[in-house]
Length: 295
Image (cartoon, rainbow, N blue to C red; front, side, top):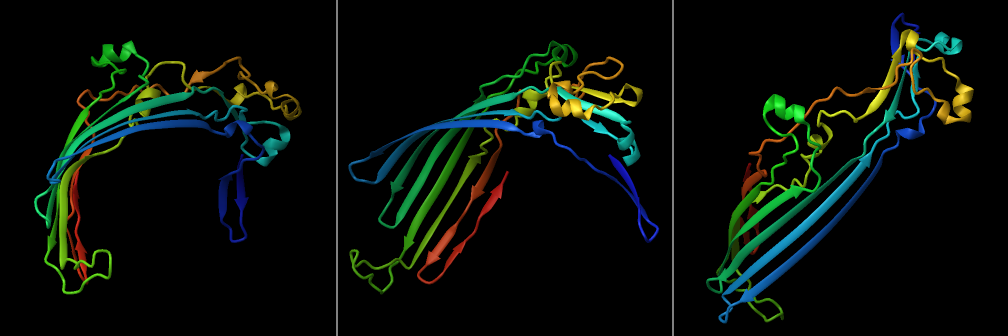
């Protein structure tokens, strides 16, 4: 309802007010996830190499339903129209589809921790990441006819990430640590690493493709204005929610909303990646760290 107010200083303002209740404005959502991980390590006889093979499989599923304006709402231009029972418009959401999505991702990494000497250790390895959605968009032949590409194709890219790091112990202090082997502490420890890291999308960018296929059967609602607006019967609605109008006063029922806008992903889409490096120096009485990243 729109309210026009005049203030003591001569100024005016128009605001929209809402009253009543709509229990169907709630949103229902569910999510489930599961992860399987395994690590296998091998040490050589000289204890200089530790080769580690790690694998991980992750699944996440989501289901969401947002009923929206399922009980309908009337709009009025003034308080006088409310009192006279003359609405300017009526809208109601009749059907809302439930969005369900799932994403399966996995990784496989092979690395080696090489102890070059008592003071120098080097770590290096490769990591492979992949993922794919478990739910595909509904196929729309009109999109393929118009643009020459299928809207139900979702790419499943792979990403290979090399990484390298080191840790170097510099000298020994004169002080001896109490107990715990009574060893002297190092004067400084210099460490650092550089590598490529893949972003964990897990289907976040697929949701829009699932919802916007350009096909009918999406959100259905009625929008009535002017003479097509039903006359409100508040007592009947309170006694039985089924009495809420499903048609306009002129007999029209429902239209698809919003306007269909098909969306698809490029077949050349890749997983987002970034290169990062972080050198670190830690001494007996001070430390220093720097980090750099590029995408």
